[in-house]
Length: 157
Image 1 (tube, rainbow, N blue to C red):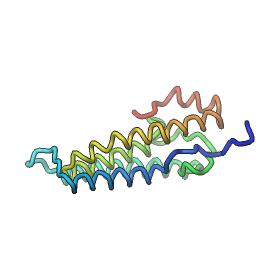
Image 2: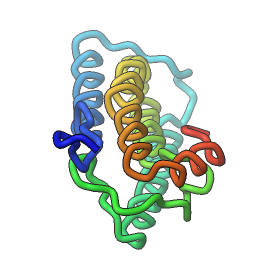
Image 3: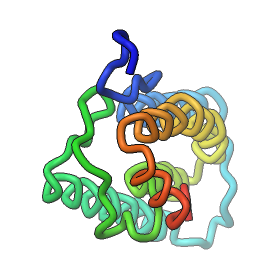
């Protein structure tokens, strides 16, 4: 390893900050120009709440699995192990999927197409500014162990 190798992913942005910025951006756009997308008879608040809570539950499950494994959740900290338990058996990125579901839930709850549209830049930032860097870091740090996990488990679903 070279002398300038950092023991963290070097993510472009901390994911909770990216999520908050997407949420704020969606709310701001909705405030400037309302853009509903659901039929008025739909119970949007309840449906959105369910989707949001599903995303939150996935995120909490994934974070708890990381903690039990004794590794860091923060992208700025070193990862000590490849976690293959809990939701990580099904997807390599359950925390980010939880964040996507959270945004979708809020979008449904307040009936805002803007919050659906901000999923695109949020996805691009997470995919290329965070996940791509995390994957490169994990390959450098764990080599064949990570490559075998990566071959078995999908990035998303």
